[in-house]
Length: 413
Ligand SMILES: [Zn+2]
Image (cartoon, rainbow, N blue to C red):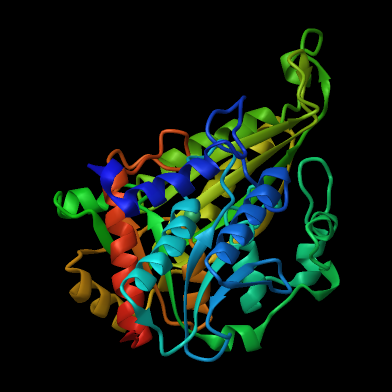
């Protein structure tokens, strides 16, 4: 069926363009991170696709790419997402929103819509924070939620600074920072995204598309446990100051403590011993903790509980503990009026999400922002198994086109 559908073949065409970029042979899935080789290829691809559609492409001072249909101006209806992934991530998280935005513009042109306000497609830099550790890097810089002095000094696992990486992508790091004039142009922001989880299925198994309501508070912490590096074979247990023991307690405490906080989640997805030898007691261990809870206060309290447990274990082991908060976003409600309007227009259910998004960063900065979610049959995300059926993706494109058409007050040409 889809083979004979022009929208389907256009979707398939764009999707296959991306299929080979940034594949991760070791982890599986994709590893595409801010300004790395894969990301630069994707940015080039987006620019070419936008230009092919007659859109005017510009890169803002923070490296976010904007493709304009109509001259940039106030009241713009902006849609888009991000092109980067988590390490070993799926194909859909991010790129689906970008591909759908391009196809929604194609669809509006087929419908003969001439928007009364500018329309733009945006690709935000490093939404996942997979390279420099700060999620929603591009949108946080744009809104002023991230300090450019701090961001410039962030570095990746190979000690490449964000400033150097940006420069390599043609973005001048000295100009990073809040861009209030640009932000003021956005009349509405719509981000289409693959659903992460299965709330849509649980609420209405027939619904392929959902409308977002709120994003829970979420943050990242790095807990560094310091001990004494030593020989794994010759160091008697009473003489050990092994930082892996308190680090392990962080992993277990995260699971145990959320049991007392309904709706909260806490995850250790990354742990790095230094120096990291099989026959070596580590001298230090970094543990990254991701916590998501109802509010910023609840989230911080939960982190305190986990850290208290790590400190107890560290004292017993004769180790030190230093905690560094890498990022924190409070709970944010997407625009209530847009939510109601889109739910009515699309006949779609409304769902919340435990995942952070650029739309949430913009909403927190006062931009009317909304999200559309495309059904994910297994709910798996941030992993190679992430999936959405093509028919549902096409329904997403139609829904996004309907939503943009409803917002641009366009007249049929
Ligand atoms: Zn995403």
